[in-house]
Image 1 (tube, rainbow, N blue to C red):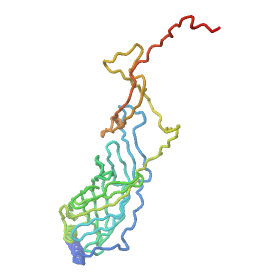
Image 2 (cartoon, one colour):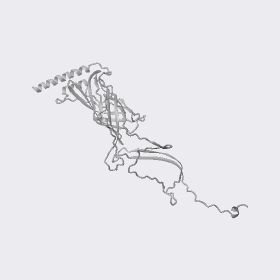
Image 3 (cartoon, one colour):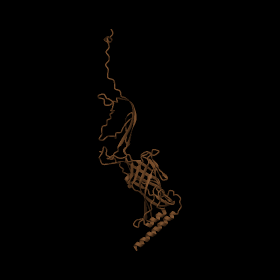
Image 4 (cartoon, rainbow, N blue to C red):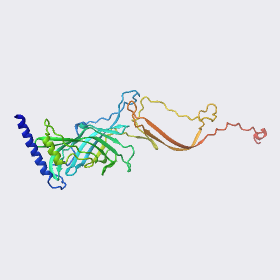
Length: 361
């Protein structure tokens, strides 16, 4: 008897939800403006973002020391993004705050679920304001593309799980999306690479290749099957890849602590007092080409430089060292004019005849 009453209640509730959503679904298809309940600014940063600490290998760490990655903290905001799913679902105003860390030298960024907060947006169906929805992100991972963008900026790709929850008549139904976002092109959308200074960079990420699954209901959850089916019917789910569109303009700030201050040392020279080597190793350079005889006591045939020019470049290995440090490779070219001749031995003056050395009388 109790089971029959429960099923009857669920059926009536599901029918009411279907009627409500169906009514909205047959409404006008005009694109919504900004309603009074729409978010208009980013929410406060989550607690996890208030005390970020940069991690790095200990200075002078031994090669066999425990692995400790280089990490650069950052903060970011999504400013007035949007999500649309044809034919009639629109979340037009999406604002969020987030923080995370970029690991070097892999150039990958991570944002945990506790490091991102989304301001509760409204979902519009067929142009009418429907219901507020909760949008949450699981852990996000970002990779920086090694090839620079055409304008010199940085292209990135972001992967993670997005969860959307919609409530009606005291019940909540959710669905999860496995979407990837990029500053490059995805389907019919094109993003914008990261540009600007490190303390106020900006970019636009897009996604157009994700599919939208059906809402799955359960008699033991807050989303009974009848309500889930009502949502699927009204929202035209499932939706194949290419139907949904995600657009997210965002800004970011790399948290670089203790900016280095350089002190002048004279004409054209600077020194950074923060540079102190731990476990310093002496470095020496010598030149002794094969096939060139060297006089006794001379270690290099280069005795003097006339002119010299060239450049020195370096690259960072994409794999961290065993202790988390960075391995560098240096490359150089040099062009010089060099005096390789030996100085002539000192000569004694030729004695002059005595008559020529006498003083005149």
